[in-house]
Image (tube, rainbow over all chains, first blue to last red; front, side):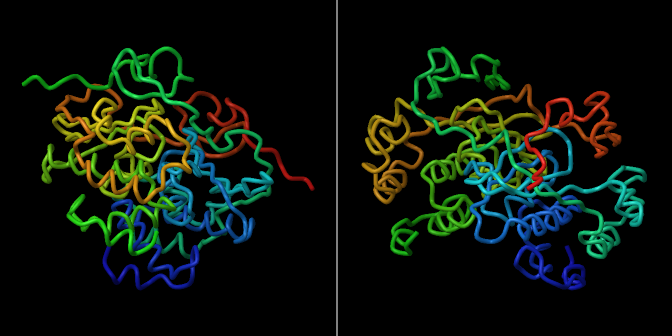
Length: 200
Length: 200
């Protein structure tokens, strides 16, 4: 991303200058993807709702883009178990207090995007990518900010933090370590391998 | 993590000083988790196998720790779609060339850990956490390096990059955008919500 682009965005987002948000997204995600930038506004709003004092866990409802915004701008990552990701293809996330289970769900609201044609056309895939230059789409996202989002307070009832692993077994199939709660064999041996040996 | 700790680890790992690897892990993951540090050595070895020129995708076989090593030390993240994660609870990862599908699978080899009691006891949960001070476990990991790992060349046959979304529909259940390939309703409405409204 050109520095000209990042210079154009002012204000504070997720506790840092907006230009820094774009740089962090580019470094981690590969480029300043619109979905991750919208995600930063979503995280920012959810954080404001639940307050900075809460020890928050995250639930993300899509694999696309949004998990990276959560991982960059909250302490929650996939590997530390504080972020759970549902492959539901809904552009929504929830941050919630892991003790009280009270939190805030934020989503990109399709009906609100009507006022922002670039966002509307990008989100609903109404025009080909080439017809939507990244810079003008980002400008539209920074113009809209929360105006294309909705948020509401929720109590989380499911998909709470993943259970701690209690013991480790050795799979009789592959000889690798696994969680014996899976059954007699590890899930890899139960599901079948995704690879074959390269004997070439 | 104290700077004393990070100063103690020398050498280059994943293309940067080892101390920086520990700092990046702490910043992203919350602390220098042994699983992410082992993961850095796994990524390092897999990268060496496939070569720096390859456009590599990643498959990780556990949700625990390892996805964060991949996201930190390769260009692959969950949100950009270059990393796929299988909830198989095997401490293994594959980096592969997305064009040729040729790659390298690296795993923490239980039988090799016997020579490194701290790693062995941590990985197999043989002693309580309090009996395994983080610093001595990390020292053991840096002493062992690749000696507790195995690697082999593979051809990836499944779980290749996730498909591109082709169109976007509006779910009649929740009114949110979704991928019509899921069916008549979005997967959220099909699966049931994980939250209830906070009416308090």
